[in-house]
Image (tube, rainbow over the protein chains, first blue to last red):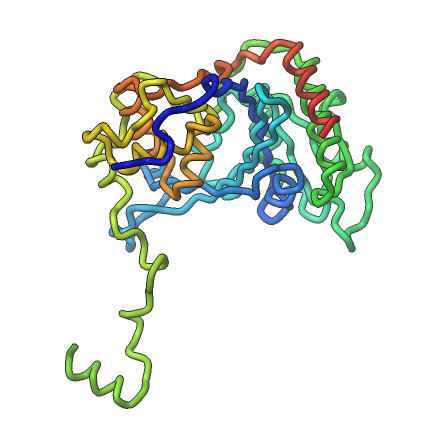
Length: 202
Length: 141
């Protein structure tokens, strides 16, 4: 087999430090849009095969022949510097894919919980998850056109957020707006003290 | 072709659901885990994080020369040779399940053709200076 590049010129590629931030929220809240607004690559999707881990959750009765399932996981990349790369992972929305969250959450710098004020309850599970695992997160209210605008404090109270959790109004389509949200997550991560993580029940 | 199907086709009617899936919709011709020869775990003890970067070793300059490598192994090395790619990017770019990419990268690590960067261990945040640089980098975007 012959390849065009048989000898590499120049120094070996630099090895960047990689960090990840999760983007969570209910179905259709704009996670993909948010990732797409700042990513330098168009949101990619990965798929997972149905594994043992999902067996207790996925009832296969009647469809025993089904061996794979498609879990879409959006992710994007932001190269901050040649040696510093930030990855964004949109977490799968469906409850039954919690097992994937554990893997995604490992080593995550922090998370964004995107909420739609018309369906606040969709974000309760994510907020609960990050609180339990002591993962620093910021809440971003995606301001949909046509949705009532609520004051920040009302949303904070409705979500029962701790006082130190950043809460921002955002437009997931706008790069500047999303940048602000990400900066808020990282700033929060800096001040976040790391107590011993309590084992979370799944 | 059975007589019934032939008859239906002559009448210009759809032949039912059995022939509904074409091309990509019919699923991969080769089942994903056939590329790993049925293995679902990697021989190495490396836990390959989704954002672990795959960096080719100098020995991998011409991966095509190694006859024991599959085309997918070679493709992984090729994709990473200009700029290291994460496991997640490789999976998405090659349209393979993450599990398959992990096994294949594990093989390459074992053969010392690539090495994998270790992301920050869980429950251990990167130090503050890196976080500061992230903030500055984001602002400068």
